[in-house]
Length: 489
Ligand code: HEM
Ligand SMILES: *[C@@H]1O[C@H](CO)[C@@H](O)[C@H](O)[C@H]1NC(C)=O
Ligand SMILES: *[C@@H]1O[C@H](CO)[C@@H](O)[C@H](O)[C@H]1NC(C)=O
Image (cartoon, rainbow, N blue to C red; front, side):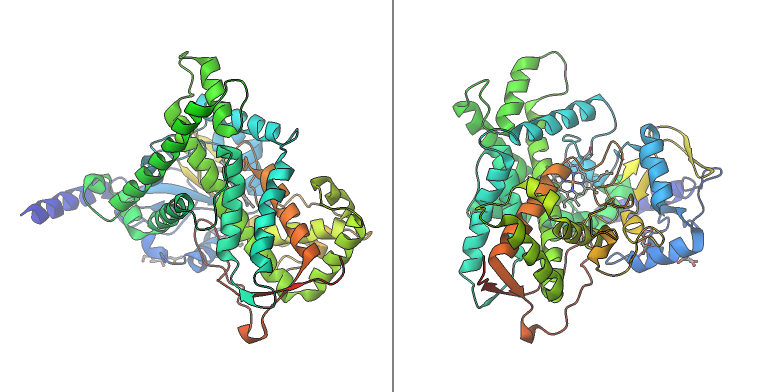
């Protein structure tokens, strides 16, 4: 009986929604819109990349897609993306507010916050705090080097053997951001980290999946006990873990002497009092989880891609090592400033980021008002999908758009140059807030490990498969690596 009523309800909704999915006037072109489903039949849920390719070929650089009844516009190519995210930043810097992910994060935090005062205040606060931690004795560099010691320990235990680096890089990236946020790191088998990582990965899968599509397109099902309720449970678990850490901080902190991000935020809360500002303890908890999430998978997948290509291109690995040995001769540690003397290593790391294409469709944007792009009209509240891949391998922007080649970032004199189309962190006011930290991590970790170890593709591993696993972030297929200590150092 219950099921019949639900079905009837759904049918009524389906019919109502039929009238809703109409293409607005002068909207970018796209495939014919089916009632209710929009264009989801045009997309394979597991890996829609091939389907996107077809759509772009048929409809051009600016095309529309209906995800259920919701219109979205995919934007491709450097010129289009620059015009939207930079020239018309005020019109294109919103975030959709009516999705599954918004409900999961209770509309708090910074990544998914709409373009407005709360987002602006929190973004400015994070940038300032991250910068301040970059100065002084306990500098960001030292924190990163502290974690690199643990990576080295793990690798040293595997000398001469093969290991899978996935968990190691994932935990290292997670620990670096945890140090900044909470002032602690976690052993690689710690319960806290294991639970958080499990919740994050499960939720990422659920978010990519068909039930979320249903949740987003047919609001009526949202309260039903369907598989997506698990994601809400996971989110609660994470929040209560973060809550515990904040409570501990409140007990042990000395106001005005912050040890980490959480202390800084609590100081800021004291300063602002209850003047109606957007700062609150609940915000802090979601904010910390946001930063942890945004900083972990991205950095670790970029590192995984990097070591995959360094192993399978031994001549590139060796050339990096020569440059590193020369520049660091007699020095104990590599510092972030040493990058200015390492054009080749810089080029390799940037090329890794270009090829890794870690966040292929950026984070979705949303128009904040009725606007125009390339002659098309786009109404307020339209979801905007910036295709960063289309810029990172755009023909005409790169010397070698479709191959792994550090020459993409070197000029004729062998100096490091960064083409305008290098946008792995996106562009405009919403650009990745952790860019500075991420670049420091990639440089210090890559250089320190290449200086100490030689990384070898195991003979019995077969041909390397470079095709990434599709998701919000792209992940290389799991692989093994063989590690040797380098003789010269
Ligand atoms: C290689 C590593 C990384 C890559 C490739 C990357 C990439 C991106 C991209 C493409 C966006 C979306 C920008 C947009 O909406 O247009 C983004 C946003 C963001 N990233 Fe990163 N990211 C990385 C590392 C980090 C780290 C380490 C942190 C943590 C400190 C971080 C924090 C954030 C935050 C908070 C946002 C949301 C910014 C906003 O909405 O205003 N990211 N990132
Ligand atoms: C999209 O799906 C519709 C309906 O199934 C089909 O008619 C159309 O050819 C598809 N278009 C593309 C570009 O795949
Ligand atoms: C993004 O661009 C790439 C490369 O041009 C293309 O293969 C892919 O299909 C595009 N994705 C979307 C969503 O349009």
